[in-house]
Length: 133
Image (tube, rainbow, N blue to C red; front, side, top):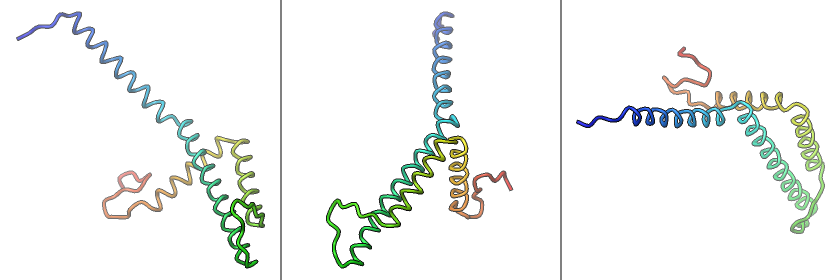
């Protein structure tokens, strides 16, 4: 049986405390509401940009089909759908910049609602927000 020096034990305890503190700090940073909100807002902005791009491409394709001509590659055909998508995206960006907390709460609520709606409804699986009902 080996015995450890009290100084070695103390050093081991201090090292463990430092490691635990670092882990708690990392979790706190990762789960901070501000960080989560920023990520959700960024995802929403990315999704809006993607929707705008798809709407522009679809509008250009529909316009070319209606005219009977193919739109040249890289053309920037401006249709009412494209202008509306641009207006909606710009308005959303202004709203987010004016009130980022409100925008984050809206995105968080929409995410929660989406998760609640698509959550499997199998017997025994709790939906988000259910408390053992």
